[in-house]
Length: 367
Image (cartoon, rainbow, N blue to C red; front, side, top):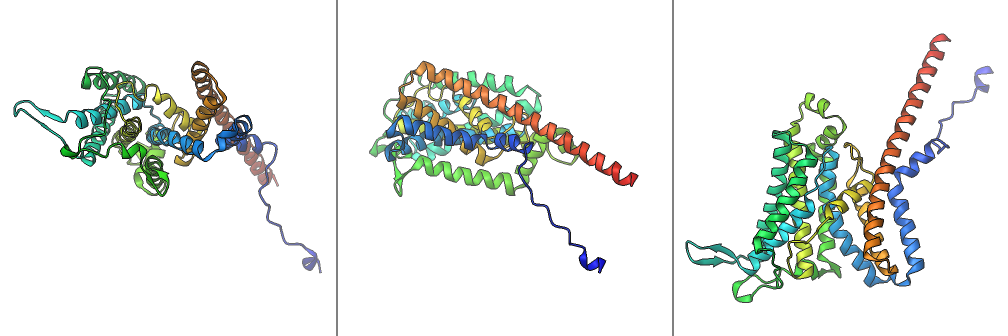
C-alpha cells in the first residue's frame, strides 16, 4: 500500500526567475533595441513605415550587414579589423579605374577594358588579398591586430587616392562599345522587386551561417576565440584560421565597396570613411563579445538593422549630422558597456551555480 501511495517524481520545467531575467534581457538586447526604435520612429515620423522608406533602410542595412559579417569572423577569433572601411574605398576606386580607364599597358600602348563580372572578381580578389595581408602580419610577424589594421587603414585609403590622384570617377555606367556596361545594376537593379544588394546580403548571410555552424573552419574560429592556447594544443592551425578570418573580412569589405560605388554611380577615395566603426558596432550590438568566442551571424544582422533603423530614423526626425555622429558613437560605447555587463552577470551566475552544486554535493556526502 505504501508503494502504491507513493507519487512518481515530477519533471521540473525551466522557469525564468529573478536571477536569470537580467541575463535573458541582456542577451536579447539587440531585438529589444530594434523593437523600441521601430516603435519610437514610427510614432514620431509616420513616413518611417512606408514601403519606400523601408526599402531605403534595407539597402542601408545591407552594406552594414555585409561589413559586419566579415567583422564577425574576425571578432569571433578574438581579433579586430579597423581597415574594412578603407578596403571598401579602395575596392570602389579599383572598380572605377578599371571601368573608366581600363588596365593600362604602357609598354604596349593599349588599355584593356574588361567586362563587369571580371572587374568585380578582380576587385573582390584585391580586397581578399589585402585582408590576407593583414592576417599574415598578425599571425606570422605577431603584429598587434589593432596596430596592423590601423596601419592598413591608412595604406588602403592612401592607395585609393593614388589610383586617381585624389579625383572622383564620376560616371561608372561604362560604354557599350567597350563591353563594360552594367555596373550600376549592382546598386539599382531589382530581382522580384527586391534590390540586388539585399539579395547579396541574404546569400552572404546564409553562407556565413553555414560556415559557422556546419564546417570545421567555423568551429575552429569559435575555439580560437574561446581559448587560443587550448585550440592550438588540440591541433587547430591557429595562424591559418586567423588569416582566413581576415581574408573573409577583406572580401566582405570589397563587396560593400562595390555596392556603394554602384549605388552612387561614382567612385571617390573617401567612400566608406569610418564604416569600420559601424561594422564593429553591428557585431557588438548583435551580442558578440570583443574578447572572442561569443557571437552569431544572425545577431550581427539584427545589429545591422538596429544601426540602420537608428540612422534612418534620425534623418527623418531631422537630427543634424553632427548629433547623428555623437549619438552613433554613444551607441557604440553603450554596446560595449552592455557586453561587459553581460559577461559579469554570466560569470556571477556561473559562480553561483558552481557554489550551489558544491554545497549540494557536500550535503549528499554527509547524508
